[in-house]
Length: 417
Image (cartoon, rainbow, N blue to C red):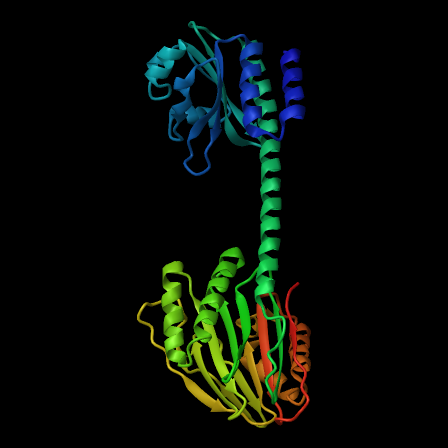
């Protein structure tokens, strides 16, 4: 008995992090030290509830397909902590396939549960080639081996989960780096306006994005979007939306047609629950007009003295319906106006007192600091949210201020790095 336990302990030290090897060595040591024809180990499948055979020793290949159903009497006994002895496995074809029994040449079986902290992980079984009644000492040894095996299996699984978490973390960091590179690093030089932008995902990657497009002969294109979901799926959809938008914006001037094509491009790549809110507009520095389409996004704001304009015209989010149609609208901007594009992380986020920050509070903050440059305006909004004790969310904001044509302006972008 001591020799068997020492062998398992050595195994745990040598192969604890290699689960397939660990399972195979457990059944080998069990069969050899209990001096039986063979041994088998089953693990509980969390999805199906079946006890699925994972490793055998001395039983032949026919045993590889066997499993114990969760609703079987054997499973019920094992899950309650009972050892199960069957004198003749040929009388239980529902548990042990006849072909497997015949090919392995086995008769009696003793099966015990693998438990950790009261939770059944699987079973450990030993088989004899002749009818055999297992002694109390044999039952005790199987329970000891099963206990050590359960410990080893738990350690190996924890190690695998830790490695998987580390790999996922590395993949997310790489995705965050790629996503950050997709955001603009500079603002196109357009006379008469200054622009600042700021974007931060709440987790490593997010679904917010913005873009600043230099359109020779046409002016400055401003885009902002927010895709459904969080994490890596949202980041992938965000990249698809940005790519589709840029490819159309470079060639098309008629905004409704551009959005129709973006929508058609995204439909094959999205599931039924995936979509993106998207706002895009073009500022013409000669006429100071801003033409736009709003596809279900939070209405950008034009902040001017004593007035707030909400840019709502457009249609439904992109990626939802194949026959979606979009309309455009135009607003003429004045000197001193602020054009503010933002995602819902600035309005829908919950602050202290279980109240959302809200569009009204955002507008008050913008009006109070409208005389400042765009970068200072963004800083003021962030300070107001911090003072309100707002929680976390993906947040993106773009602020453009209109100046006299010959004014000296400064632009700034702040993206995750």
